[in-house]
Amino acid sequence: MSKAIDTLTEALKIAEANRPRVGGFPYLAEVLRRAGATRNVWSLPSCQSLFLTQDGPVVMQGKPLVSGAVDVPAFDQAALIKALRVDQAGESTFHEFLEASWRAGVVRYVVNLEARTVTYQGCNGEEYVEVYPAVTIA
Image (cartoon, rainbow, N blue to C red; front, side, top):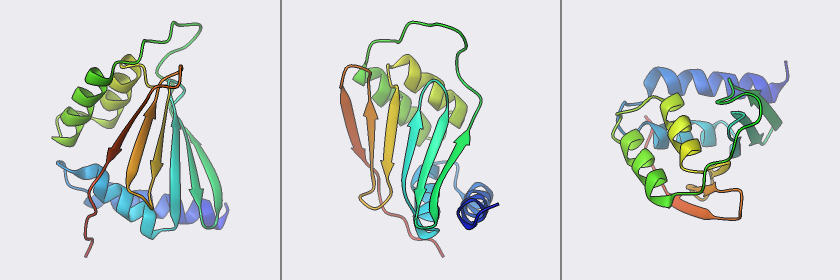
């Protein structure tokens, strides 16, 4: 394995072991940022995650949300915001959040770990940008 994969894998383990149920994403993002990740690009519904890190790019392939040919849902910002708030309250799993985002028409989202923003994108150029808070890690 490469240094990029080793560093990223270790950061993900640390974040998973220590992140709070409520507000877990900002904690995860800060752990990744400290480990040298600058961006994380998610492609839905394939659940492919591309990490851009100081040690090089790493791709992780998750379990796809769909198989075969399917219609892409229309972008629904209100449904996306609802999915975000449910997740931020600790009331959904990550997989449930991905499913709800897909149903809201999100085909891609980009986490800018330096700017602390997440840009959710629909297939016709729609975007919703959300800023997440900085967190302090002991």
